[in-house]
Length: 187
Image (cartoon, rainbow, N blue to C red):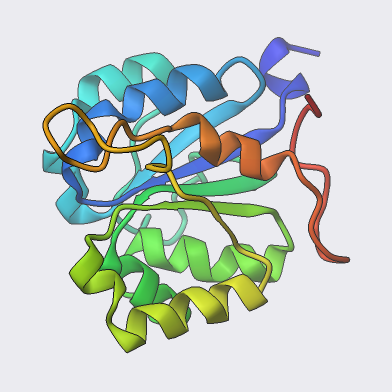
């Protein structure tokens, strides 16, 4: 059996936020224990180095639906992480809207019973919106694991601090509820 077949498969869903430029940090950390496939929202493709991501994962980035009859480019996921997750994606996902491959993948992941982690990248004004709070609550009730990527304190420039990509993986190692499956190596 090859090394690729021995590791669980992680879908990394990337949304259009400035921090997405550093998605390679998450991918490098994930590749220690997972095979990785990246699914980007159409808008996110302009926010990170797609050639670098494809080189790191050894797989194409998916952003559009495949045509009928085309082979599946990724195996079924053992877990899914959304990082960074935007206001738009969280709200559409909670509402069951599946108008992009990324959202369709997230909506389907619940039915597959795989662990899902989320690192939101939403400013305070948007996070205060009642629809966003309700969406986070609804997704949390579905077993989706949200983490705060910024709780390390403010940056020297006065912003929110460093985006802690590894938290997306840490959230996947904790079992949650009866639907959760083993997502990867326990640390």
